[in-house]
Image (cartoon, rainbow, N blue to C red):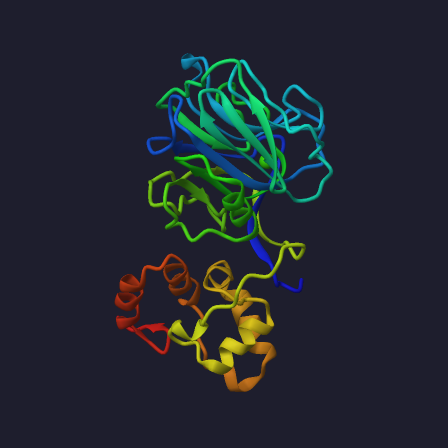
Length: 303
Ligand SMILES: [Ca+2]
């Protein structure tokens, strides 16, 4: 894999794999404007849920689905209404799907950044409480997702079309304003938004996916990572790890592979903390990075 546009992702089997027990305390409720987006790919023609949360008792909930009531289309589900994407998304290729809900029954569905406006018959009333689930419909514990999901985010306001393009093309850092929940699915189901929505993993395979159809991100100064000098920064960039966020999802095994291929002179480099440092840099948490780096020597923990 060339590794120039890596994204972390989880692949679910459509049988019993899902992520559950996600706290919904910070997620939008009632008729609040909000947005939900993710990358997903599935070849399935069965009804399946990408993400769902809210209480059925409140009559309406929020979820992202494929083949819900219209075959092959992407559809949010507001319990009794199922606005649809108007286009097929179950072609087994990576598709960026989601919606911005503007309040009062007005919704814009997005597929690959293209906006599709829809109107519901009434305002939604997402019920507070309950859990959220990735890859399963939370209300009847069914409609398991068969395919891959990446970069799932929920927002407490309705993103505009230009913002949706940014969410599609770039990984989030977790510190974005009005981010209510963010699951990069980087080996686990932790919520990077800081809102405590960590999920419990029940099956599934975590891996890195190359989304080389996306425009490359602007390179960043990787020498800010302790243990990474100019020469190693150049090696990382050659391997496609051009930003803090891309470095933050790299595994230690992958980093060692990059160093090994560059020869003996890098044999003493220890990349154990680079991803951790990079995730702080990507989020602009420079104070915390400084604190961490005080405990490092050449990028290694010494305390
Ligand atoms: Ca399974």
